[in-house]
Image 1: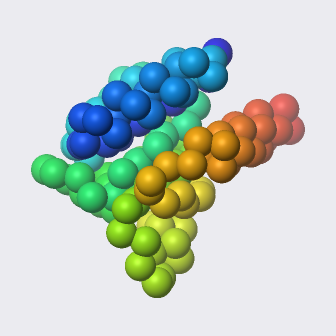
Image 2: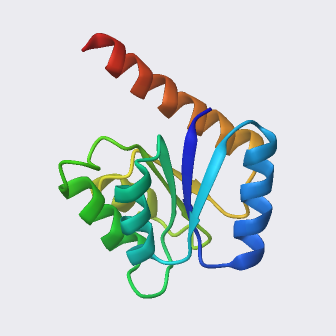
Image 3: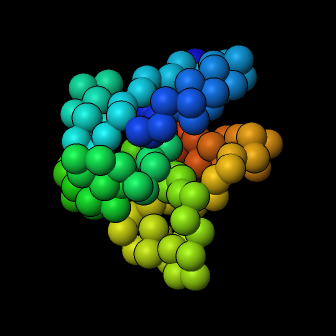
Length: 129
């Protein structure tokens, strides 16, 4: 069962998305800000991280940068989630190290396709070793 880390400060979004992902067979850990997201990523080593970009304490941009800079968490795929879909945000997310990008409100079939694609790539990379 793949483990996902959902880093989301909005309680309603966090609860709704984590329940929907768990019903799809994922184990979901949650964090409410970027700093907690980094700590949970290091402690739990999830298979994939869903990172809200607008977070308190430490925003998702900086949390992603730190996770991708650290040798122990660098290989964990990260999908940026943002409600502020501005021109250039997708490019900025990819430049910061995110592996993909999705906009809010979440369309579950689209997000699941991105999660499954990144997990398949990660598994293929492991198999190649």
